[in-house]
Length: 312
Image (tube, rainbow, N blue to C red):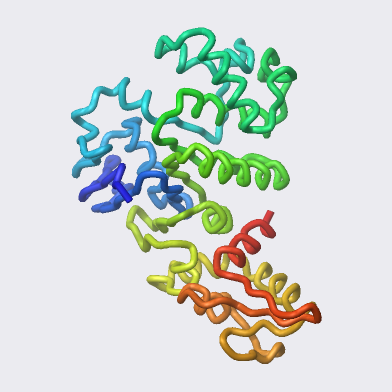
C-alpha cells in the first residue's frame, strides 16, 4: 500500500502546552484511518495540521511525498475534502449550490458540475429531484451532514478529513451515516482520516486506529489487533470501557443458539471478558457457534462490527 501521508517527529506547541509530542505516523492510500482519544489528546490538532489549518511547531508532514510546508496552500486544500462537526453549510445557498462550490472554483463545466451534484446526492440517499433546490434550514441535522459530506467529496479529492462529524447527531442518524461513510469509502476508494472520541465508532469504521493520549501516540493497529493485544493499560481500559455491556449482549446472542467455542468447546458459564473473547480473533482464529442448524463461524471483523453497531 502506497503511503499518502507521513508525519516525521511532528510537534505542536501552544504557549506552555504541548498538544502533539514527537508524532511519527504513516497513512496508506485508500485507508480509512481513525484517530481516537479523549478531549485534549491531540487528535483534532493532528487532523488540522494535515490541511494546514494549524502549522506544526517542529517536524515535517509529507503528502504524496512532498512536504506540506512546500505545497501551495490553495492547491493542497483543493486536494483534501473536509467535514466538520459544525456542518457549516452556507445558509443563503441551495443544497446544489453548496455541493457545487469547489467544482465551480475549479472551473468545471456546468454539465459536469450538475452531474457531480446529482451523483453525490444519490450516493448519500438524498434524491436529487427532492433535495437539489432546498435550503439548509429546511433539512434535518442528519440531512445537513449528508450534504456536507457531498460538498467535501464532490470534486473527488484523493483525501478526506472528518473531524467528529457525527457526534452531535442522534443515535439513529449517527449509525446511518457511519454505514454511509463505509459504503462511500469502498465505492470511491477514498483515503479518509476520521477523528472521534468514541471507541465504538473507531472500531466500526477504522481499517487502522491510532489511539492518542495527552498528545502522544499510544498504539496504531487494526481493530482486531487492538482488541486482542492492547499496547498499554490505557489502551486496554479505553477499549474495554467502550462496550462492556455490548460484550454481554454478544455472548447472550451467541448462547441463544449454543456455546461459543475457540478451537475447542468453551463452557458457556465461564466468565468472559473482552480480552479473553476477542484475543483469539485477533490471532486469526474464528469463534464457532453450534446451533440446531449446524455450526457457523464469526470472524473478528463481524464481531467487532456487531459491538460497534450495537452501541448505537
